[in-house]
Image 1: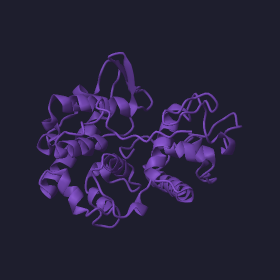
Image 2: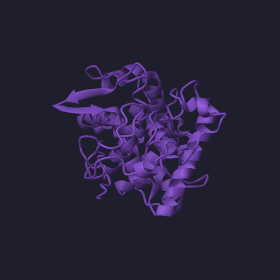
Image 3: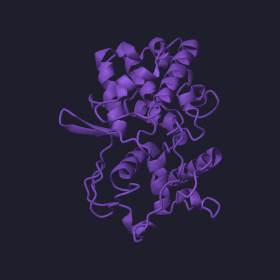
Image 4: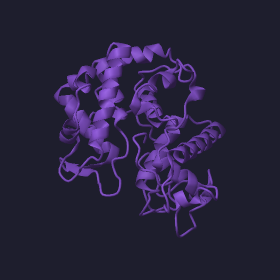
Length: 302
């Protein structure tokens, strides 16, 4: 079984390796800032461009990269400070694909641009340098990036996703790799509860059956437990949590979905196999009704 580790150099979605360093860093910083749910009830985010279908985060990054190709200066924080909801709509809507919450995404970009200028002279490189290569601690990457509203999530999904991009592109040198965690979103949570890595308590079972919405506090607690479970798996298996995330996230999108679960026949893009590699140890494999992640959509954290 071969495992394909993404290097994030596909120029349909990401800046070229020979581009200006600060331009590359700004693209990732601002793109991840607005990379949260694209598909919720009433919104389907997918489009065919030049004969290829893109959906979800792939479409979002594709369209942002198209703007970058027009002019990398669009991602200058001085410009980000002035972004409006109409800008988001014009950038990210295409055909029948409609991005939800353009007001929130515009707010997150304005906040990130303003604070980057005020605190780091408008340079993402200065933010990275200020961390000294440390992920943890108040003055480490996680502590510093929380000042930006887009990255304030207590479970640090976007922060770890940004780190994942930076590390794969060799733009960040981590001195405390033991602090790395999976970026926990709805896909990773769904897989964790179906596998049985975490099991909902009686008090929380209704939010996984979608009979009620989780509260903010419940969402944080659930995702922290999921993150801890995956960390234990990574430690036991000797895996980098961010590499493990490649498999988990693609599984959640292509195989272990809310609907249309196909444990035996689906193809997982990062593996050269057919079917879920975990089906023999999965709590939900033999069950007709598959449990989902907790019901919680009104968030920009993931």
